[in-house]
Length: 94
Image (tube, rainbow, N blue to C red; front, side, top):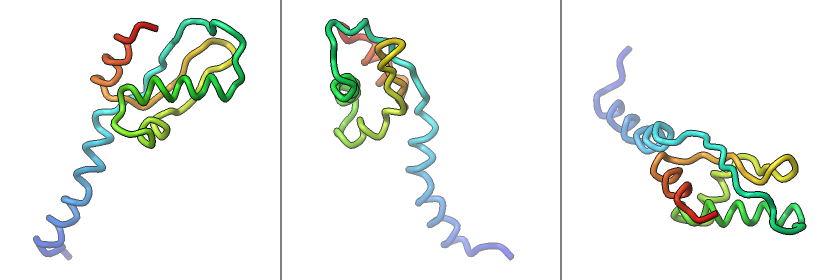
């Protein structure tokens, strides 16, 4: 049994923002220079959040895009970014 046209359009409209946000984003691993001094683990993660906040619209979006903070083997993080956000982030001085 087919859905009435009105219900189908409504369902599609609800899904469009979700699909649009998923299509453009990919996981990027951002490598930063070595830690310049001894920092606590929470300070390292806050630094990673600040980099993400520089390319995201809100702090909440920056925090939710951070997938993993590399704190021991190297200084960096994995995040869900658009290609434009990744390009902007790669242009930062550090």
